Length: 283
Image: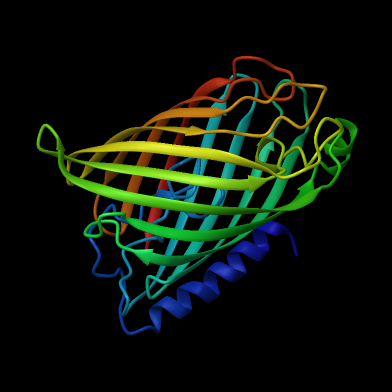
């Protein structure tokens, strides 16, 4: 069974679980679950946040599915993912990433299995916001040979992160401001798509990821994101990722996000800039 087939089988099971649960969609406000990040967890487009997926409250089970395509100058990335929120306490997620090397030729693909536990707090009403602890197991399913060839020590690895999110009411010109900070322990090269560890460094490092989003109204959110990344491989510099995004929260079930990307240097090819579009459905 291929990775995509596994995802659809798990998706069917999760949808059945949500359909047989006592409540659907949830009672939390729209936007308080973020969107689906490129690694499957809830948050921004580039990194997970402290919030859990969808709008499930402590009496709900919710399922969120998403699809993203990102195009930069010499690569494009296609992501399919899903997450299940159990009573706004535990989130389980799965994503498949497929990176096409448009200029160099070939593909890199990885599966990401994630879990996020809400430790304490609330994004709306608690002064320190909401804080969650997450783990991601990443495993290359295509392109192991290339990862090894460029100096990666492993083709699978685990990320551990602590993320906090807080919504500040009436913060800027009467509009609400959403702030997120994530600390990630990782050895991943280009998020894991070029393996883990390298000839320059094979030890875990603590990376900072952050974002700020402004609600123009309850349906529209604009913001910026930054994701720091380790520089483990001597053959090519690895830069941080940045974006400027706009999210349209159509309703509690559907959201659409677009962004302008600056991914810096990837595998020795400089100035990788472009955009992404992501569609998310919550059940």
